[in-house]
Image 1: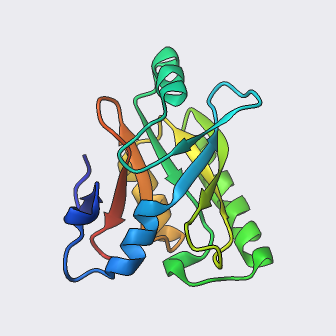
Image 2: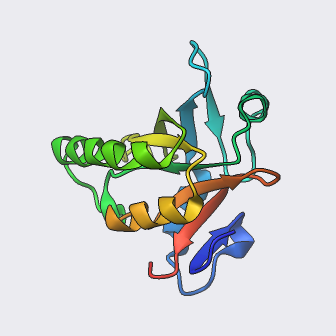
Length: 159
């Protein structure tokens, strides 16, 4: 996939040196997104599983990759909503030139004390570029997908 990253597909992939609880939260998050063809539906992406409706639309549009990415709460340290929205707006501006389509999303964790994080599904973005952008916005991980595979958690080795 990409060099200088760690790809995690399930709990067994978590190295001992990482915060297991934090990575489990990422793995258990539901990543909701608008569909590539905007309609009233949306889809939930889970690590290891692209929903059928999303797979079909990706195939129909010839999409080769995507990244689910946010600027909210860098380093998984909670920020206030104003700060998060401002930085997510900056992320949106940064992503546009690098992807074919950009859709809105929400990262909805299983911890109800942590509010959903506004996010983006960047379609046909080169995953090395998505990781670079995520690093610049202080993100520890993104969800990445390449045609022929399933969504995975992608962590920077610098994390």
